[in-house]
Length: 145
Length: 390
Image (cartoon, rainbow over all chains, first blue to last red):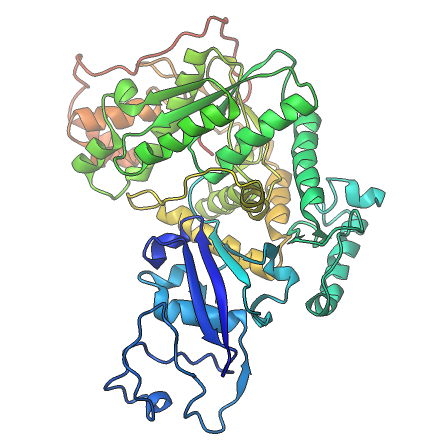
C-alpha cells in the first residue's frame, strides 16, 4: 500500500485542542475505509474486528499507521480524503473538547479549512482527495476579536 | 471586471438586489463544476480563485479578495460619513483577529484614500493573568508594526479592581457582565484621555447579527434599535463606530491568514458569555445552511421600527449622579457594579430587583470609590444618540 504524507496546521486557537502544537506531519494510506472508521490507537486487547488480524504494537499518534483496510474483507474503500483526515485527527490527535473541532462528519461551523491555501469550499470540502505533500489548514474563527 | 461584481454592496441587500440573487443561485450550480477543475477568479477572470465569498457566493483570487475586502470597508466608511479630515481616531485594540485586521485596514485605507486621520491604538487591560497580559504583547507588537501610538488603560487604574480580583470575589458566574460594562466605559475614558474624536471597534457582521438575535430573544427593544447602528455617540461627543459592520468573520480571518497578520487567539480563561455563545452557535448553523443569513439578519435588525408610543416609554438618557457618565438611571451601570463590589454585595447588582434589595440595606457609604473621569478639552454637547453596550 502506498502512503500519503500531508501537512496539517491548526490556527485561531484550534491548536489548543491538539496539544498546543500548530503544525503536524501526518502519514496515511492512500486508500481508507469509506465509512471513515479509524482504528483505535491502542489495540492490544481491542475486540474491534478491524484489528482482529493485526499484531501491530500501539502506535504513536503521529506515527505511520498500518493499512486500515487490512482485515476489512469486502468493506468499501475510498481514496484518502479530507473527511477521513478529519476523523483521523479527531480520533488520534485531538486531546480535548472534540465538539469544538467537529460536528457530525464535518468541521464545526465557524472553523475555516484551507487546502493548499485555497478555501476548501472551492475544493469539494470533505470529498477533496488528498495528494502527497498537500497542506491542510484548520482555523477557528470563534475566539475573541 | 463586471460592474455589478465590483459593487461592494452586491449581496448586502440580498432581498432587493436581483443581481446578488442571481449570483447566489449561480454559485450553487457552479459547485459541481468546482470539484472538477480549479476555478479562475470571478472578478479578474485570470488568477486562481482561493476564496468563496460568503456574502455573494463569488469565487475570487487573493489579490481581488484583498481589493474587494478593503474597498467594501472604505465604502462603508464613506457612505456613513464616519470621519472628517484631521479626526483623531482610536482603534479599540484587543490583539484579537478583528481589531488586528481593523488596525491594518484602517492604516491602509487612511494612506490609500488620504482620509487625513491620526490613528491611535487604545487597549484595555482587564487584568486577566495569562490571557490579557499575553494579548497585550500582541498589541505592543502591532504598535511597532503599524507605527501607531498605543494607550493602555487598566481596570485597576480606573476601578481599583482587576478582573482576577473580581472573579476571586464573585466567581465565574456573571463575571462577563462586569467585564463588558467596565470595558465599554474604559474605552470611552481612555479615548477622552487620548483626546480623540472617534473610537472604532472591530465588531463584524457576525457579531452584530448575533447581537440582533440576542436582543430579539431577550426582548430588549431599546438595544435592538441601537445595535445595528454603524455609529453611535458616546461620552463627551466621542463617536463610536464599526467599520466592519458588513464584513463577515470568515473574510476577516481569511484576510488575516493571507496577509499573515500577527494576532492573538486564546479564549478568555473565565467562562465565556454563555448567552452569546448560544446565539453564536445558532448563527453559525444558519450561516452553514445559507451564508447570506448573517447580512439578512442585520438588515432585519435595521428594519425594526419602534412605535412612537412605545418609544415614549423608554428611559431617557441622563448622567450618572456619581461619576457623571451617561446613564439611563441615577447611577450608571459601572458605578452600580462597582458599589456592589466595594460593599461586598457584588452578586446582588446584576438585576433591578436585586438592586432594590441593595438600596434597602441603606444608602451607599460616602467613601465609595468614584470612577475617575478624564475631561475632554472639548465642551460637551447634548447627547443625541443614546449609546450603550450593544
